[in-house]
Length: 378
Ligand code: GLN
Image (cartoon, rainbow, N blue to C red; front, side, top):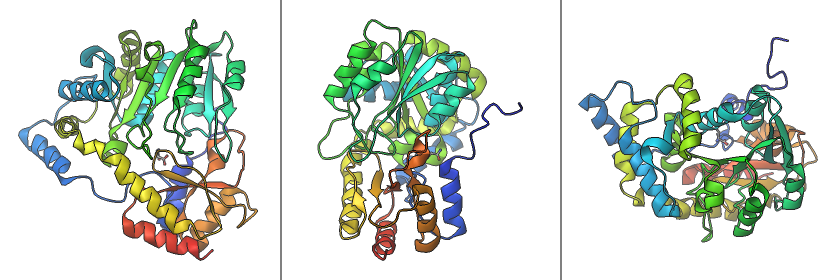
């Protein structure tokens, strides 16, 4: 057959954004802010472009940026990564994830994922001949039963993919989850790919428990993060992968032939901007306000608001409103009520429909107000 991914269509994010645009709907589907990034950051970009930093960056990234990342990780999690040999700048989180999987997954390797799962994990594993084993987290609380996860482990298990905080469920892992994970991987050679792109968006005083806080996990983990999510610049497509030297060494073999290197002036701008931790420490309360505004605004509707512990996504259960599948409901909501969302079934291989949709609240106050107004009429 011609296709390597015969069951894969166009991502739900592109589909819903297109439907939103065609219907002039408020786009709360794809996760991106509709407000401007800080002008200070933009000024830095301008500065470095004009200063002449317009040619290739080093393959693994600009040293100044890697140093700032190492410092941020050390200050936040007391974990050490060497900027030269353990941090690689990537073209966004998705490219880091792709490269991490490409670097390690061979035919018939098994990879454990937790669903609802960000939609790129599974097809990427498949592309390299890997086999996905999944644990389905379910509404309303999306808890992980670690005994079941343990039963998925075999001597073929090569990697576990974590996404903490979880997109789309807004679930944040607890100390107990990390302890259970440590028990499962101890004494094995299982790798962990930890997608932590929402690390700085956790609510109600929670602490983000990065994989790198635990030496038994850090030594086998590829940690992925994203500046798009950190500084409201998803269109810049810059992120990174932090991993021990032996893993980074393999990662870079693929990275150099995949993107080679990433946008130079923006890396320099990000490094300059990152020097001030206030530029990201405010995010928890900034997004918590938006979350609370949306939840308050929807509290008198028939939508059931599921918990949102982190990320900028709110999950809504709509079974009191409609018995349509979540995909049909999300389409109807976009066309008839002018609010675009993402159906949760897109995040499950088996298209599990629990009548839940996802709304992105990384939006201006007025955008959220309009969405609330439309959703209140249902
Ligand atoms: N991370 C974003 C989301 O979950 C989308 C990224 C993309 O469209 N590839 O909506």
